[in-house]
Image 1 (tube, rainbow, N blue to C red):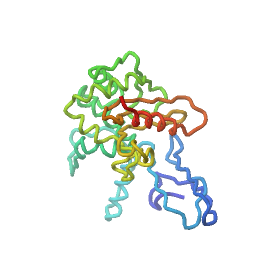
Image 2 (cartoon, rainbow, N blue to C red; image 1 turned 180 degrees about the vertical axis):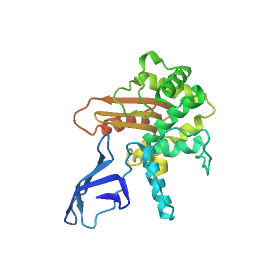
Image 3 (spheres, helix red, strand yellow; image 1 turned 90 degrees about the horizontal axis):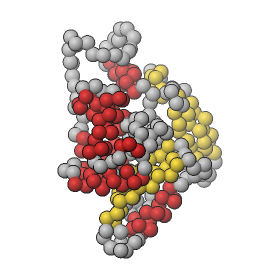
Image 4 (cartoon, rainbow, N blue to C red; image 1 turned 90 degrees about the vertical axis):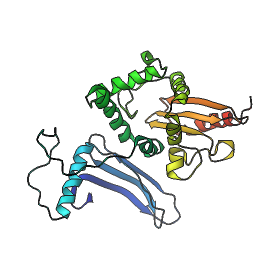
Length: 278
């Protein structure tokens, strides 16, 4: 079935089963790579709680154009011709425009919710501003240059995208802790720190991806860190205050694991740090 009767851009393939009340819910929502087919599988008990999931789309530019076309048609505006992406003609007339929220505000949904799309766009924007070219090559070049300015040994770093979704991205825990330490003197550090998910805080825009983790004891409301998860990889890097008030920087990178989840291992390590007294 389609997500919207008038929208052929996204296709939902629902394979979920309805089970009796009281049984546990186990739902997975995944997008088929390279397509906009979204598969929903698992068991949903009658009267069960509502599930909501955010899924990235393939070719987001075309998705925006598709939504724009639907909006025009909903207002009775007839659309002539096909839809395609490309460069804006020099003689084009701007009908309307909208500026995004400031970066310090954009940081909140970007970091708290681990919005990969924001990461990709920001890297290209850096390329546009610094090199005059909003491309992967230009953006990643600027990104590597800035990392070097922050004391990171970029000879040991491999960058392939802005979101960290590529398995070809490489960085050591040592370089990550160096980065997290050196940026503390920057004027924008408070905005960055405020964007980090906070352990055990249920509010989505505060706890973010850590809202359901480390919610007891000295870690609750204390750990400020960024999660990173792809197949076979789980990471957690950030800050935690030890029992005696010392602020500690940590980076845990777990690669190539076969069975999971491994997040309890990360949580146990951070708990030790939070309970430590120097």
